[in-house]
Image: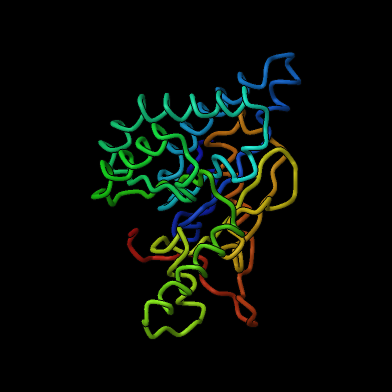
Length: 252
């Protein structure tokens, strides 16, 4: 059975899927391997998932790559993760660009190593004109930090003498996810059932799916299963009648 036939029909599926890619360390530990190997295999899973997502009708994929809290991990693990970023962009950016994928990086740029900040800027600028698919990578990202930064932008505008009205639209426009389709589905792998400070604002009406699979084993079949679960949900947004789950607006 193909990934596409295993999933819910494309017109009923989620347009924006967000992934908490969890379980690299446990995958490696269960095989007696260093954590670094788990992270490297996780990159392979990411490649498979990016390829499968548009085939399953997804228009935007947001992945949690590195949180603001991940800096507290051992220095050698952080260094290895940064090395994977360098390698992934070096090997995959041109291919993603040729496929019409726009890359957008969510999160704070302050505090990033200079070369990583340059890589982020390059990935965004090179793919800025692409419209077939939107890949958002949350890197040095935290949902609370993103809300704080959005609120600070409003404070700065007010201090500059601009007339502002503080409402959901104004705050949402200051988030790093501004301009992306609403998040329909948030998936976490490894069996853990929490958001871990990921897309806290955007999760308001998203469906949540928790899968037992460890991230390095992820791919088209697992994503299709998550999308099929989404297709069985009734999305009421606080009302009584089911709302169409799909979003038809163009990726921006």
